[in-house]
Length: 331
Image (cartoon, rainbow, N blue to C red; front, side, top):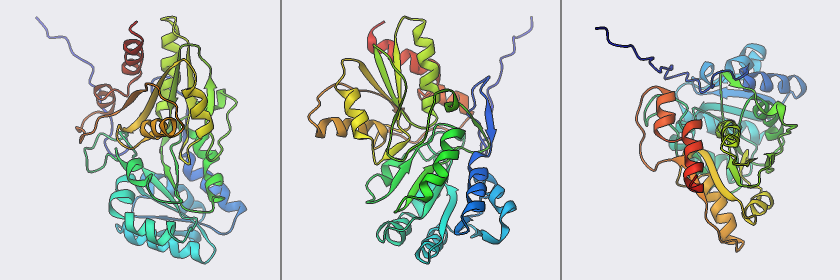
């Protein structure tokens, strides 16, 4: 008697893909957007810490080799050099993995860029649970680390549309910025929703009578998919996409918080210090007392393995999100 074979869920650990089956994609949206911006603005420069290929900075490097700087495996030098360039009028975009930009080089970002208010744009690859590698590369607490830094703008884009529009917008911000990068073949979703990225603004992608999913980053794609699935259960779900974690769109959050709908925050980040806590504190500080249901990564170091398996294990899959909402509604 033969043993039935099971389909193995695998993914490349270093260049993981979170694209769900059937999703349209756009190749290297960050690299191409930065290259286009550089054609219009000669002060744009690109830097990386030995991770050009893995942060799509290689596209910029090929198009503008005289404005690209390879800093090697030295993240402190990367951010310090970017701050020096900003000091003399250049607009740097510096890319590395999120864990290295936040854990290793925090002091350089804080004192060299944030304290003097320089437009240094940090581009962090592999944010949250977007790699099958373990805690050494999973930046599950990057937003929590950076939210307390004065003057820093934090953007968690949903897809290629968000990234392409965020790049020129962040170049206009007065102080430093941090972009959670989705790289490689990035899903394209928001072009179907009459959407435009604006720093500090949330966008209501769909309305709903029963539930509002307040989401950021790649989880907005999952929120939209979950909303369609929940309609089969006769649950009407709205989705509020929050691409800018800081500064938070408090008006949009308060509108949702003052409604009588179930509010679920959905993020690819630790339950500690991310979007959920930002929303909760916004409501509390404005006297809006209500329950929130957080969908986020647990406060622990996560396992290594195949990305689809990890997303399901830690509650980020569409299936798990649908179940969490139904459980909250006791359906």
